[in-house]
Length: 144
Image (cartoon, rainbow, N blue to C red; front, side, top):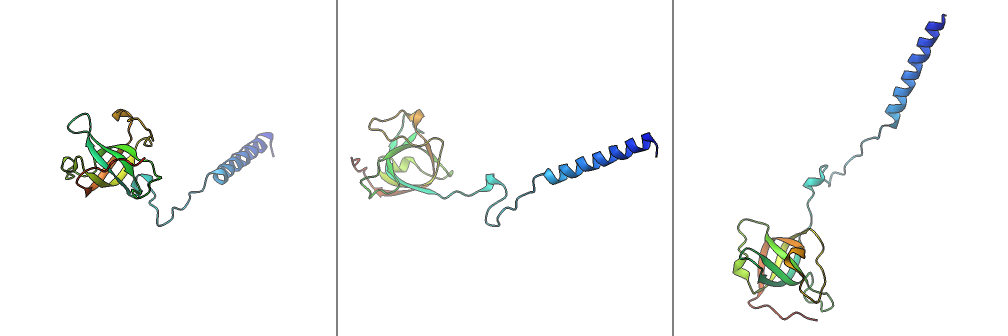
């Protein structure tokens, strides 16, 4: 065998070994459980239920759910405030103004602050309501 032939055999063997290492080092695809969608944008989140006082915000289309609690019977739970946005086209938010309501939907953006003073509307987290249910015709005073 000539020196050139040995060089070509060594070169082919090295290339084959490199290709084999790349195949072995490649991550293996993980199986997605059948109960979970493969695309995370299609994941369904559990709705949250909040009960609080629905009040008018700084503009006719701005609504705030004040003293909102996940468990309104728990006097130890601190109420939080959310900017309430309609999660459906047919949700009649103004109909429920100044009433104690239960809102069912999805929170998004930042966590609601717990504060003795009222935070600015721009600092409130948003809650996209799919439904509103009147609990009382008038808002109950906030428990302290």
